[in-house]
Image (tube, rainbow, N blue to C red; front, side, top):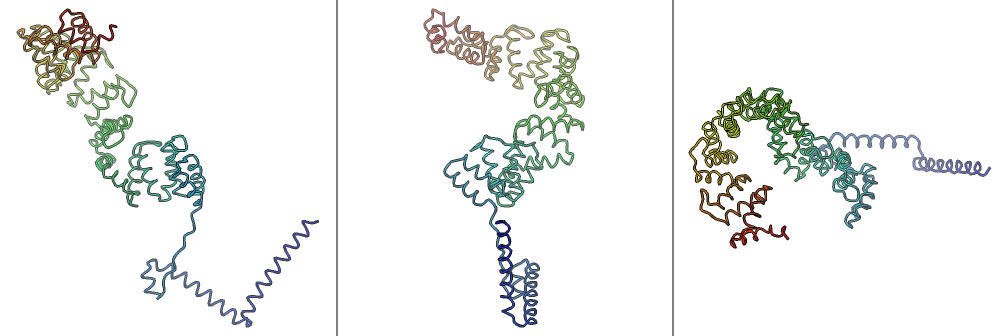
Length: 456
């Protein structure tokens, strides 16, 4: 009963207000015709004003045409602005957890800058657990509302494949948008990415050399984030179109299991395609596959065939392998002289293992006259390149004075270098020849290595 009475009272008051308002309008214009004339004039004037605003977008043009100053548009305050401001205050106070909560309240109301800050919180793991997928979601929402900072962050995520699939197209799109809005970081990034973006554009147009170069850049992280899977993708695109170097690179990735599951059969397939096009690296690797029986049946004669093809092109690794096969008579008749010939060719190109093989041949007089001085010379070259076996051998030569003047300090120096690379014999040599020596000079040098601590 009370509710019904209250409802009637509300309706009565509403009617009274309406009548009062209507009377107020009629009192201003006692003459009804005058009233309607005035109303029509006002409506027309309003219409003209609206028409003028729409027709003249340029302020100066509008003033010239109408003789009036165009009314300034007033933007409504952004929804969530209050929550956003609170979030900024908490951020300054380094209360990240509360800050991100406030930013989220504003972001869910569509506030673009708050959306950016929520994304940033997830990207940096401040106030929330780090989550790039969630960060990208918020960056994208803000970027779609023209937030330049969010555009930059989204572009980076696309470029690095962080929190989303790697996509250079999208990366370029958002970085360009951010740069256009004056984001300095985006402009710098675009400048640094010019080469790789140009490669990407060429690759999209079917340039197989650009595809192979993109694969190389991704594999080694040159101008782009290191990404072996993406590298394989681009190598494959070029390889399937017959680009020989890409076929070799793809075979290499299958051989080593980089960016793709290791598969020797697949490696041999791509090495062969490249080898048949004359790529020396591929010919050598195909020879190794035959020599080791990886992906194909073991066949030393076939290995020698492919080593020779690459060696005759001056490929040092193949020259050394061919020398090894001649030295041990694998796939060919044993021939030390021929072995030394190929070792020397590779050694003169700076191939450390070939230098050591040549030193070994001189030391033992196989294929050349025995010459320990020449052996020490080539052993030194290999040792200086960091070959542990050569370092250990050189240590022994200095210890005994073979091919070099005897020098215990140099012997210990090279033995320690070899030992530091994990050469077990070098460590035993130091302990036995120096640690247990009665020569005080040798004992002193041994103490300097610190190995005596292990003997305590």
